[in-house]
Image (cartoon, rainbow, N blue to C red; front, side):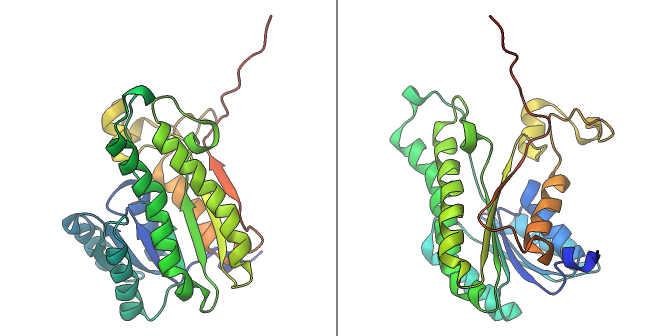
Amino acid sequence: MSLDRFSVDGQTAIITGASQGIGREIAEQFAADGADVVVCSREQSKVDEVADGINDADGGRALAIECDVTDRDAVEALVEATVEEFGGLDCLVNNAGASFMAPFDELSPNGWKTIVDINLHGTYHCTQVAGDYLADGGGTVINFASVAGQQGSPEMSPYGAAKAAVINLTSTLSVEWAEKGVRVNCIAPGLVLTPGVESQMGVEAQEIDREEVDRRIGVPSEISDLAQFLASDAASYLIGETVTAKGVPRISEGGD
């Protein structure tokens, strides 16, 4: 087995929601392996910091662009800037997302729309705009869903509904774009120790024991490893799949 098949060296990738957490980890890992990366989020200063760190290290180059994925014009500008800077596009990672907790009965129309816009419509905008460039030579799309989109999650109905739609979009688009040579797959993480989760739960990274198999919470690098695999030639036979990364399954014991 050649480890070269697991490499993204020489690729150009756009990673949305790359200012922190999983998106940042993916950008840094791809770049360390030799990929040129475009990191974007809604705050320029935050992605500037990520890009500066990548450009100061050995590996691929990084370009930081402010982009609201719900804004079609901004997404078009993002993709155009990527192609202008790096000459093409090989991989799109639709990581940008948002959520909040509220009972369904208390959800405002604006609250529902905001979450669906970011998680679903943002994925639509980025993927459709990037499509022609990805098809030029064959590329990959890596969507981000969630276990909340597979089995539901109380008080997260707009998030779960949007992520369920992303899973369906992944399988549908994988068939439509197969003839273009574009592979479309999806990652559905469980609980991952991002900065937001860390602050909400009071759990710190050093408390996560990777020697134990009984894992209830993941770390961003475990998801970025999966993203790199899906972007690489090693995943050439994976098309239209949603890969769940959630640690030990929660299995309920039956009884009378």
